[in-house]
Structures are given as structure tokens and as C-alpha cells.
Image 1 (cartoon, one colour):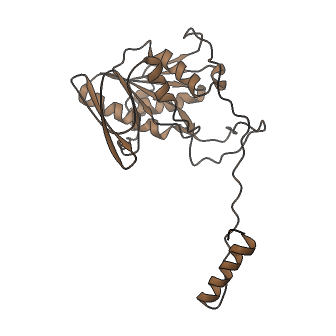
Image 2 (image 1 turned 30 degrees about the horizontal axis):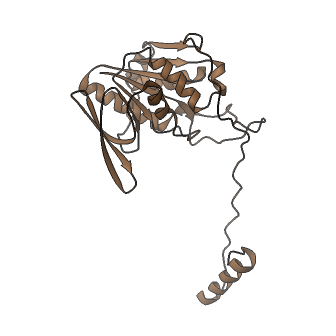
Image 3 (image 1 turned 120 degrees about the horizontal axis):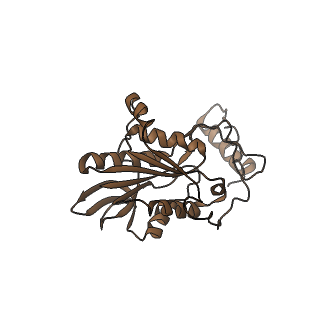
Length: 257
């Protein structure tokens, strides 16, 4: 079975985010970059399917030269090969544009299944996986917590409000991951050494025969959330006095009652 994993490099959630001077992007100089956490689930699930079904796992990503680190990490986990589209023109692409680029790459590859993270933790737009499936005209299932493959079909259990839905689809298909699907493995030292020799293609938009898709969405401005005010401790001799003081504060200072 030929499996494709859509991969993105994102800032670590532990990184301190600062707004750049242009006011509509973030500073990246001191950011720690990692594989998008939901894409880690996708890599792990692809490896588990390959271990049962046989076949290959190919990583496809769009990013800067630094994204090579994320692709190499996924190769160290056990993926077979990677393709990175590194082109300055992609910096202005929105999620839909990135999906067009990814689908263009995927169309050049054999595949039975595509797995992607449900979202990237930097832009949180939940868009790319669904758009890639639409461009490829294949079935799409989101928020999958369990899957079963047999006889050219895939059954996916996905989370819905108040329960779980079971969806069956013929292959090829694309599904996105949800927490609980698996526990991603760590890249071992032998895996890291092997990853250095695994094929990793770097492509540009010219190589794909396309221009950067015009964005339909652009960031106008970014602002940090307002700092929360320090908590106020009510000091009073009795519970009754504390309650009266609390009511006074809510009425006269906070003005919420």
C-alpha cells in the first residue's frame, strides 16, 4: 500500500511568540520549529499501516529550507522518502494555495491513502486536508481516532459531538487525525542515521509546472491578547463580610452586576 503523509513544520507550542515589525507576521529568528503535532499522528499511523499492509510511506511538505529538519525527523521515525516544495513564492500562499501545491505533487505519485493532521497549530484553519481531497476528487474523513483497512476499503471512526461516527469509504481516500488515534514513536538513533541516506527531493513551483496560487485570504494585522489583571484577594474577618465586599467589587469596580 502506497501511503502519503502531508507534513508541515510549525513553531513549537512552547516557543515565545513575538509579532514582527510589519505587524502581520511573527518573528521566527528564535523560534523552535517542530513537526506539527497532528502530523506526527499521521506519520505514526502511516507507519503502522505499512507494518501491517506493506508498501511505502512518502512525506510531502511545503516550506522553507528549514523544513528539511521536520521531513528528516519523520524519515527517522521510519518513513521511506520525502518531497519538500521550497519556493519563496509559497510564503504568500494561504491554506487553499498550499493545498493546491500539495495536490499537484500528489498527482505525480502513486497512492492508495493520504493521511494529514486535522489542522496545523500555527494557523488553525482546518482547511488543507479537506481541500487536497477535493482537488484530487477522493473521499475525505476528518477527526479520525481509529481506522481499519481491508479489501480495498477503509473504515474510519471519527469524533462527533456526543459520540463517535463510523464511516466506510473505498480507497484511495484521505483522512485527518485526531488525538487518541495513536502515540507517535520517537526517532531512534539508528533511525536518524538511516534518515540521512533516505531520498529527499527538493522541488520548486517551476519544477511542478505551476505558479504560486493567488491568495484569497491575507493577514491584515496581528495583536497579542491583552494581559490579564492580577487577581484581587478579598481580606475580611468573616465569610459574610467577604461576600459583601465581593458584591461591592462586582457592582462598583467590575460593573458586572
